[in-house]
Image (cartoon, rainbow, N blue to C red; front, side):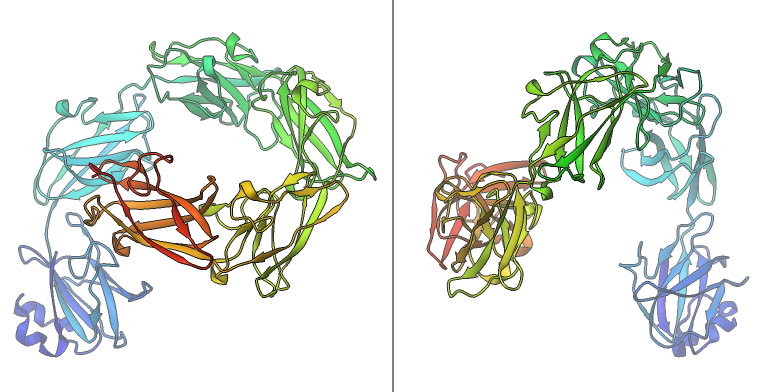
Amino acid sequence: MHRTLRPAATAAATLLIGSALLASPATASETGLSGVVIDDLGTPVSTCVQVYDTEGGWVDSACTDDTGAWSLPGLSDGSYKVFVQGVEYSAGEWFEDAVDFDTATAVTLPAALSTTVSILGRLEGTLTGSQGMAVPSVSVSVTSTSGAEVAHTNTDFQGSWSVVVEPGEYKVHFSDYGVDQWAFGVDDEDAADTLTVARAQTTRADDTLLPVPAVRGTVTDDAGRPLENVCASLVNPESFSEYDAFGYACTDSEGRYRLVPYDESATSATVWFRDANDVPTYAAEFAGGSYDPALADRIDLSAGDVVVDSTLSVGGVITGKAVTERRPNGLADVCPDAYAGHSGSRIAGMGIVCSGADGVYHLTALPPGEVAVLLEPSWRSGASPEWYHDADSQATATLATSALGARTALKPNKFVPGGVVSGTITDALGRPVEGAWVYLEGRYPGRSGAGEGQFVAQTDAAGRYHLVAPAGSYTPLVAPTFESGLAPEWSGDAVTRATALPVLVRDYRTSTFDASLVPASKITGRVAMADGSAPPLDIYVAGLVFTSTGDYIGDIDAWESSGFRFFGGNLPAGTFRIQASVWNPATEESTIVWFDGAATEEGATLVPVDVGGSTEITFHLPEGYS
């Protein structure tokens, strides 16, 4: 689409599209916004225009008359962006030859626009399945004969699609989960038909999907009633994992499912059925009615459609209560888990209901057999996880028996609430440090974000903090905010975790840990090639800073717009190793490099920094990197 913009006051002198169009009220207006839309043969175009303010808000619209003219004389003076809607053989565009709002040119009123629409051709069709049903939501790509994609859309609910393209020759590709074919009815691009699209004409490209091998069936309960929202996963029984499937589908209201394999060449496959409702009722099982993948029926995916029906039974329920030790009050947010016997794996497909204020928890949809129950309190409670009944391992747990359709009640489990750690964080002058994070386990969260992890607290305006944790020995890390200009440190004023002074937490006791923070240190510099030249402009360098004993304690980043300079601040004093992950978008690979140009951590050069000091370095990428 080609357009010219001119002030309304001079429109009569400069308009080049004919006197018939100049006579229309729209183009004669000296206020507001007006215009004319014609095609590239000079024929008036019946369409509509939409006007938006420069923030993207819709303002007004108008449609052309039989001369192609439109007018919005009531628009207030100011700047606007204008969109001319597409018609049968042209695509809509923004002024001025822009494809979206952001790149559109703002028009200052009063003004009149002359718009020339290029008439193209249309390619459209309908995609149906082998049974004649419409196939919605399939990706449709139109490519040139050289293989370049020129248009893209998706089939609608009726399986229909349509795109406007330049006159020429094209091929059409359909793709989706389980769909990969070219028009007409072939799975190879070279064998695809070439379709010719002419100006102002429509070329049809209706196609029918090739047969797609699938696994299908019906899931019912013991009484033969269909079960809805039971999900069937195609899995490898030799290395079963509930999170590793190569085909997946859930049943409808009539208990039916149909899944298309991701990988039809899998040498061993079976179907695993699980109740996918919020609190599952039916015990998960494998094809053939087994609860053990090793005993499941195998499926031959090379033989076309495979029918696998399943009958699920109501699983066992185990319920119990988590209570505090000294007073048997319910302990909330204790989540149960179940494992097979004293040494088996976690039971897949069960339902988990964590305890409420009354301390009562539930496990549902359990298969028959003996299970070890693991009870995991919220880390905020300070209580440690334990196995039923008051055991410290699966091997020593008291086993509970699960039976289909039966409910098993366990004795209450008593939890020790741990101990309290509190203290005050100040600077070297004794002033309270607000907003500092205390990580009891001594691990810096880095890019995960401040406050991430268990047993973490933040100081208030008085520099005080308070947290609860299980009994044990800890080496806490204090990490102040970046704005504070203070350095992180481990307990005992240590600059590495290895040299930290342990803090002992006892059940029912309060331990005190205070810290006095010194000014932060920093490492600055730039990334360069081995010869000192600038790196390729499209790479990204994401670095990690480690203490001399291997503690992660900071980050650096460098890229083109930063001039490949980096800044690593809020560090303690000491010596550091710096690792960089260099992302190359051309190869879509990352290369790990250590300062300065070393391939291994052992070969890294240590960078020393004094208290409150700054060290400038140049991080060289190794020879041969590109």
